[in-house]
Amino acid sequence: MMFKQSIAPKDELFAEIILLMGEANQILRQQFQLFLNHSDTFNIQQKADQSAVTQADFSVHAYLSKALQSLSEKYPVLSEEGIHNERQAWDAFWLLDPLDGTKEFLAKRPEFTINLSLVKHGKTELGIISVPEENCLYIGYVGQLPFKYDFSNYTWWRYEKSNIDLADQPLRVGVSHHSDSKQMQDFLQRLEKIKPLQVIRAGSAYKFCLMLEGKIDIYPRFHPTCEWDTSAGQCLLESVGGGLWSHTQVPFTYNQRQSLLNGNFIAFTQMQYAHNAFQCV
Image (tube, rainbow, N blue to C red; front, side, top):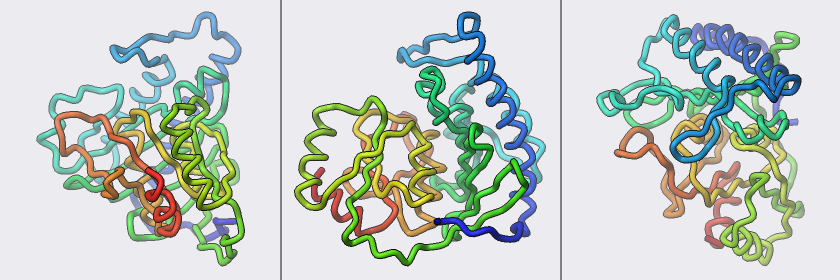
């Protein structure tokens, strides 16, 4: 158990975010039920990059883009489904992925999330990952141990570092359901020579949640993501002593380039796992 039940944090912004993310969760849960029951009439489109976007993405985007403007801390919103042409003038902003894991959603797997983060001067200060089908979210400031909130029974949980000795345990590697590239296979083969492996398949940013729960140790990614896919997860991992680094072992920064595409990365929960992984890139 990586989270221990706690009293509610005395943080006005947390309280405001819980309210609006609770509503966003409900919207996405309802959309998922609509898709499960009426997939033939569910609106699914193709983006220019051939990835899918659905009415669920647009519904959560529409709600949160407006709701975030009601918070006590007001910043512009950079959303995957929004307009991106003003972003380079922003020093501080909300970074939003209204539905991370559209592939999981369309495969009828409940491993999709809402990713939200507060970015200031290229670095993520606050990360939130909400898991609608589990009715919970993870939230935390960089440099402070994160919290988990359960919407079902209104309880708060605080991250607690484990004292379990993992030296004799296999290294648990989180990979996507579709992640079978030669590059990934080569990486896993090299890593297995250092330490026995257990490969865990899970969707998109949901892997970050499994890392916080102590179920995945590293998450290598060798195919494209965008900044809204990684910002919240990176922040939450950094807050527990892990991180997310490029293959040159540098943490990602945000809204600093012409492109919002990320390069390859490895996310990790502890520095010892990073050391193992980067020997094999």
